[in-house]
Length: 232
Ligand code: URA
Image 1 (cartoon, helix red, strand yellow):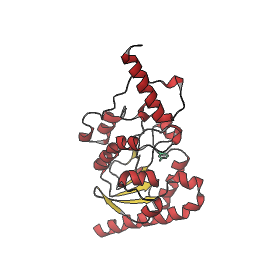
Image 2 (tube, rainbow, N blue to C red):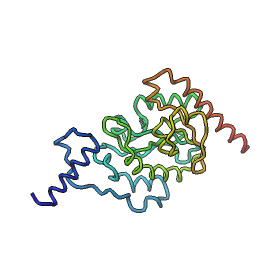
Image 3 (cartoon, rainbow, N blue to C red):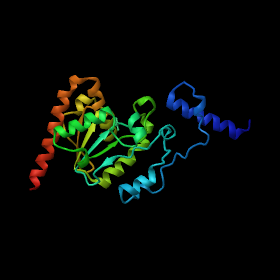
Image 4 (cartoon, helix red, strand yellow):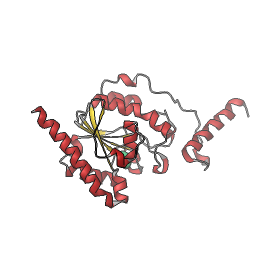
């Protein structure tokens, strides 16, 4: 076997190891080494549509090789409120939209409970491709993807961001604190106010946490109303 061929196999196996640990999937050998660079000029995209066109075939991290669909984000491009989750699950990976599964239904209900509709907010995730088996995204995957989210935030210019769960909160705030510590306060970030609550999937597994989420989102709504009323 020539050197180039064996290097390709070693690269493909390292990609697999990163994704799946020591399990080996013979059918998953990646034929070409993907281009791990950021797409040229994405930071300069002038609209969400242009940004999407530039980044939707991203291979910056290994998740690009296992996704079905790139889940960019969805909602009002002029939203005052952005909602940030962790990463697409199986339903989102198939449909190409964030929060369309069971956790998404609960998110819709949570938003409704504080008088927001899904259509008036913008929903996105920390990583845009599904981590296999719905595992938590790894640090290099988050690092590779977060510049896209930052760009979305700078285009949408929301006044408020609600982070769902620890991965979203730590990813955006870069704070290594527990969810308990992060909840109940607001944080300044790129001209927005961020608050943190539980991830809806965690609420489905632990219904006892719903009361805490209710308190968090009431606080979020109050912060939103207070700022709106101040401007009148
Ligand atoms: N969980 C997330 O964090 N994001 C989704 O889009 C769906 C489920």
